[in-house]
Amino acid sequence: DSLSEAFYSAFRHKKATGGASIAALGSSEACSTVSQVVEIAKSCFGRRAKILAVISGADGTIPDEDEMAQCYDQLQSEADLLTELVNTIGYTLKLLGEDFVPIFDQAVSPVFGPLLTLAGTNDVRARFAAVCLYDDCIEYCGATTAAKYAPMLAIGAMQGLDEDEDDLRTVS
Image 1 (cartoon, rainbow, N blue to C red):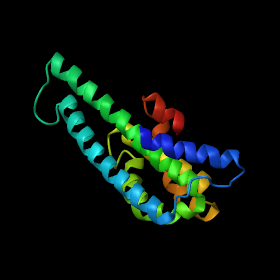
Image 2 (cartoon, helix red, strand yellow; image 1 turned 30 degrees about the vertical axis):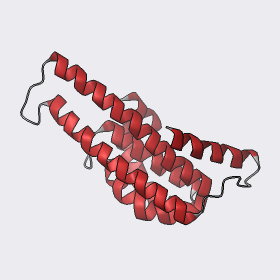
Image 3 (cartoon, helix red, strand yellow; image 1 turned 180 degrees about the horizontal axis):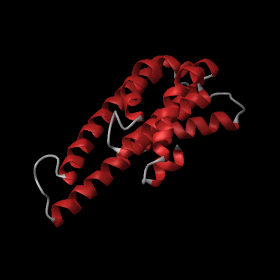
Image 4 (cartoon, rainbow, N blue to C red; image 1 turned 90 degrees about the vertical axis):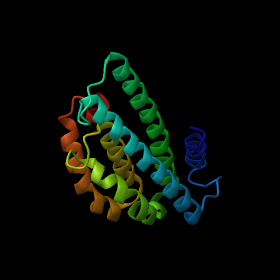
């Protein structure tokens, strides 16, 4: 939570100063930070997949009411963590703008790209995270990058419009 707040603060102050950065975050530091945050997100996706398997019975067990409630609590905790991780990546992206493109190409897209669609995951929260990051990339990383990633986002967003989950449908 604190990391995403720090990056948000740097982004907010950059906007307030007309683009002059008050936080010196170089590309190498940003790459290192984002790569580590993406690794944490991957672990979060793995835990969420296991929880969703238990909830759906895909793991071969049928949880009782108490176990189901515990699963939903764990799923929400993981969703809260994922929100902060995605916020950290998103504010780094917004802070660096077009300088973030190599980081997006190298660290973010390989992990979040497949999560844009149902074919990549049945985890609606993971799809929501991917749509948010691709939307930010298209908005802040320049026309060339937008042209590269917009088709992928369009497919994910179209699928998201058909979802029952409000957050994914809204962001799509």
